[in-house]
Image (cartoon, rainbow, N blue to C red; front, side):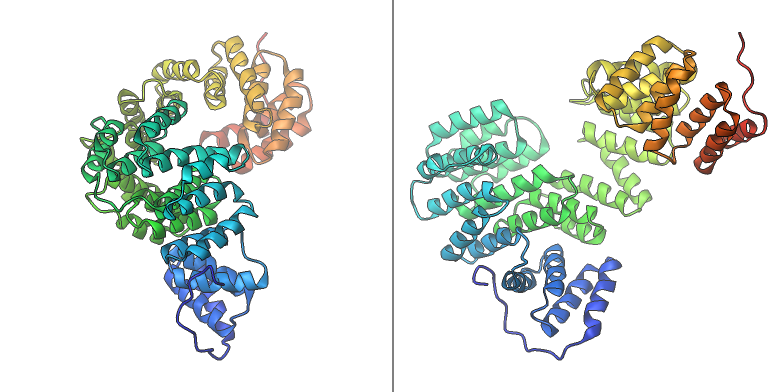
Length: 524
């Protein structure tokens, strides 16, 4: 495939039927480098096998072996089964190798597939490298709303790269007024620094944030603007947009392509590590984060990334220790304290978690964050400090009136205590309107009706809650209680037995008592 790099010719080895099996085993065990080597061996033995090539392609990208990825990609293209993101890698490799023709072909391929919205901006950056009027080309490019989101950002960057600084600053102001994107701010400042407009760059990076201070020191120390810079930012921009959407393979392709074009962009490393870790490659992710130097503007982001990776890898003690260090350090942020609180909750250390969330609220940006107040209130409640939890949860609902988790928690917590049932019921009705398919909310609202004496109204909703989550101990127990009150004792015991299968702590003893004796008659 002309668009992809080609390594040294391989001598065709005798087919080894076990090479692929060994590679799959290494892959399953998380031995990424061994898996990549195994797939390379298997592909050499069966150079036209598209099944092997696809696994080799994905594993090569995970470990950063662009030669193997190229070779595997060529096999997939020849077989007509190349994934659409192969054109992204093809573009990056062609641009890196200064293959202008190959880059244009790759952009044409992108224009014909699901990533067509990238093509106008990529073509404009290629035109910039040819000393053409890239801004005019971009302005004349057709495109839908998604494409225009990218062309707007890259028109701004191309104005800077073309040294049309006054126009660029107006475009930047317009962009940041709509969405104060930190990435857009950093990219614009970086280019302004390279084109000599350092005062304007410093203005964009004003403030005492440590990462901005380090970025200001690096202004003017990069290469001149070119298509590699623009394309790397575009691929990273898309990776940021899809982060957390179960699209780890695509995120790896995008961030690897971005790093190939700009190896100094540590932001791409942060998102690459996140994608690798979400895909189960925790050691690879930690290795990528280790590449972020101590002087990098994103060194704290890398530390936060390590916490997340260690947590997913089950290395809880290490994650907790590092999170505590970040949360109690001189440069601690609200997010650092929130992460520490989350880890403490995982450990059942609710008093300490409440203190961590309280610290997060006290830091910049925390006071008006509904989620932090919700987490704070929940931790206080689970620590047995309801009188403190109640105002925290009420504050969360006030700040997030359309946030179902806060509405649900505050509503059910009051229902469970027999407090303010009418108001709690309204909260739960609002939560159900927001998430009508949420089984836990359905159970909570039904229980509010039950507690207010309307058992017949509660029953159908409890049945739907159990249908939505058959293993839910609480919903099954509530359903059993409703059946019993309505005289359906056999069905009640059936529901209680179902609840006992997944019940924890004191619920087990309570369910045993219900199974043995039923419910006591309600006082008149």
